[in-house]
Image (cartoon, rainbow over the protein chains, first blue to last red):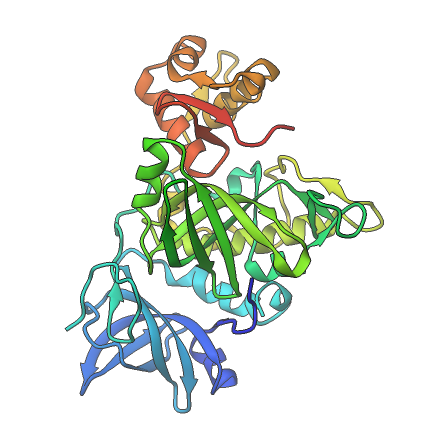
Amino acid sequence: MDTSGPAAFVNGEILKMFVGRRVRTVVQAQREEGGLLIGQSTDGHQLTIKGASGAPMSHYVEIIGIAEPNQAIRAEVCTDFGENFDPAPFNGLCKLANGQMKDLFL
Amino acid sequence: MMSFSQPDAFSPSQFTSSQNAAADSTTPSKSRGASSTMPLTVKQISEAQQSGITGEKGAPFVVDGVETANVRLVGLVSGKTERNTDVSFTIDDGTGRLDFIRWVNDGADSAETAAVQNGMYVSVIGSLKGLQERKRATAFAIRPVTDYNEVTLHFIQCVRMHLENTKSQIGSPAKTYSAMGSSSSNGFSEMTTPTSVKSNPAPVLSVTNGSKTDLNTEVLNVFREPANVESEHGVHIDEIVKRFRLPEAKIKVAIDYLADIGHIYSTIDESHYKSAFNE
């Protein structure tokens, strides 16, 4: 069992607090720009995902990777969550997982 | 361009596909309450203490003051290794990694484990083994996640369970985890249940006095009857059909639901089931 490298649940706002650390988020793929995926976070921020080109547009995509400055993530694992994902509960979970319920996650 | 298969190893430029983007009618809703398995994160498991004498072999683990019989995790599979008698794999739920072993006794077990690939999101039900830092788990039910709202829901259920247990634990000794009531005032509104889950309510059995009882609960109660718990092969679906005098399809839906969330498991074939948790 290993809990040494957890990935924090983040939305666009919380991402800023985890630069340099491992995070997980869900974005809705909007467009690609020069090999970068531009997606909208569950709280409406625009995030830049490095190394995640090829995502189906408008699909929700889970990104696990390292948070970088300027609302960017260097992707390690990408999972297509499809079109039927509900972003609101995930956004609420991000707040819980970094607030009063932090001990369950980090 | 990305491959939409289930890759053995992840590279940043590979996507794992939606194993099925459609909403899955078997996804459990938190509002349904009673659950014989405890939804947990690996982080919670890492902090679980064994009850009884320290280091006592086989002593149950305690989380939030509650002894855990069976646990449920949702995470990504890695390191899957198949042998003649078992399949071992690691689940990474983002809070940590936990090693599992799934014993393979028959064709049904083989089919279940064959459906699971590295890089896939799965829901696993099992029991904890080992001592403190060397915890591992034995899986007895594993299935691919088909509706990714279930990933969010699982973690919300972990939070809810934690709140429920810690709220009732003030000043009381460790208790064995049993079915939890569905009423809860812990601040989770309907908003926290993903849309696709809300749109798939549990089958409902109408009773003559006009009240409604959850068919899932009624069926589960049959499996939990002492005679059926002690039965080696469990209960045949036909027996349930006779008992309720309902269409087989309706009973099958309830049984599939109960099996999917780990309340029951198939034994000698896909028609015999037993309760996974005996109170």
